[in-house]
Length: 196
Length: 196
Image 1 (cartoon, rainbow over the protein chains, first blue to last red):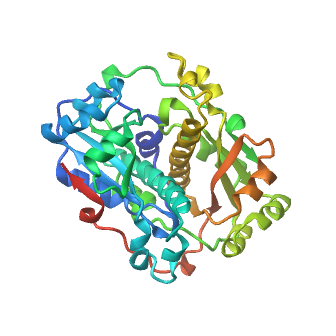
Image 2: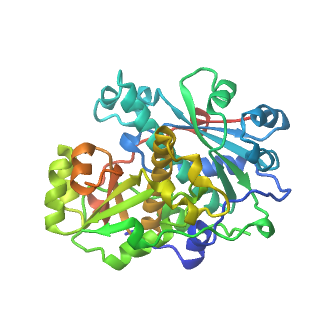
């Protein structure tokens, strides 16, 4: 039996959570990153394929390598964040399926099928990116996801082996709530949903 | 200041949550579906683009239309679920950006650029699909996500207008925990993550 969350938890995850562009001068430890990963890894993926690969950029040296890959509007909010996570996707994820999904030959569903590999890696690493953000919020951290960057340049810089592609990036830390803008509107249920 | 969740909430969302294939004979109300949507809609998307479009399949008639679209292994677990949600993506999401992201001309970032539209819709509707699953779990429901279906057939059946494409489907209800298999292994932090 699944226990529903209390109202405060729903606020933390969804209702009061915001995407931040400004950050408090408060670090995020390696242990916190490990704790976020240990939650996000439990989220469901297709055939347990777990294609997400994360790079956590913390040091000034690593940030300097990230900087030229970013869209202009994302530079300051990335450079000032305690950590920027790159959420990438492993296009050889299927090589791990004999271990991750051992009861059938799931590797053969993907091997030699680059379109299916890409679609599965993109969908499931995006799911895992969402799990990452909600796991970070669950542990009291704030997020600032971004897709404005030069993915080719970023991939050459951080994934030079060529088999991992970036999906999106996400700053994490403790947000500066005083500098938030008003929240954007959302689509009503009737605009986005049908019940048949 | 973001409040961290308690241990039980982390179990509900991540650590003890499972993907279900068998369901208790216990309905899910339209009000519950609305409540799940009202949480998931708050999750972040790029430029607040909110591309996910959901169809909730509840009635025997709608399930009969879904059935021929499903991979054989997904028929029983879908037909026996109280609700199957189709998570689709609107390839005209950018037409709503003047309202959803009014402070700049975000529509022009996408209009006439079908590859960028598709990539953005796919990434962000996948994020929203993950928000959907974690929102459902937050409210005490269980999920059974699936990507084994004939997307062309499903799109013709449920999105005949042609501008919405299915991303994945997800059964929701109250899972039959006695019929779960052992949980699959996960990748260790060192296998999936680097800190720079």
